Image (cartoon, rainbow, N blue to C red; front, side):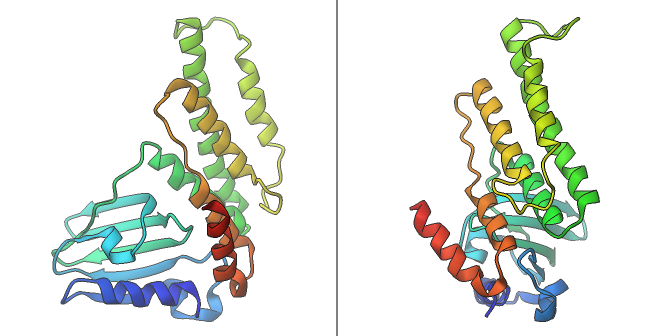
Length: 232
C-alpha cells in the first residue's frame, strides 16, 4: 500500500463525527502516483479540528488560504509527505503553529517538487525566490556590519552574492545531493543565524521530501524508515 492510501485511511478515521473525506488528484488512480506525488483531499468539516489530530504528525510548513467559501491548506509534514486539503463546511483545520521561516520552508518544498518532476520553468522561478530571500539576509548582514543602509559602492560582502551565483551553475535535476535547493536553504540559514541568534533552522523534512521523490515508490516506506532511524 502506498503512503497516500494509508494517510487517507488515517485521516478518515481521525476526522470529527459527520465529516466527509474524499480523494482528489493523482491519488484517485495509483498508476499516476510517483515519488513526488502529494495527497490531495476534499474534506467537509462540521467543526474545527487540530491538524496534528487529523494527520498524526507535526506540520513542518503550510500555506493556509481561507475565504467565506472554505479553506485550502497545503502542508508539508515533518516526515516529508505533502498533503493538500480543500476544506468546506462550518469547520476549519487549525493549530498549524507556523515556524518563523515557514514561507521559506514551503517555498523550498514546492521548488523541490517542481524540479523533481522536471518542471524547470516553475522550479527555477521558485528557486529564484529562494535566492532572493537569501540575498535579503546577506544585505541585512552588510547593513549590520557597516552600520548603514546606504551603500555607494560594493564591499567585501559582495562575496555573498558570488556564493548565490555559484548555486546558479548547479544542475536542476536534483540527482546530486545536496541538491541546489538544499544548498540554497543552508546558505539562507547560515546568514539568518548570523542575524538572529535565536533562529533554529530545521531542514530534515526537506531532505525527507527529496528522499521520497528520488527513490522508487516501492522503496518509499523502507527508505523513510531508514532515514528516520539515522536521525534519532
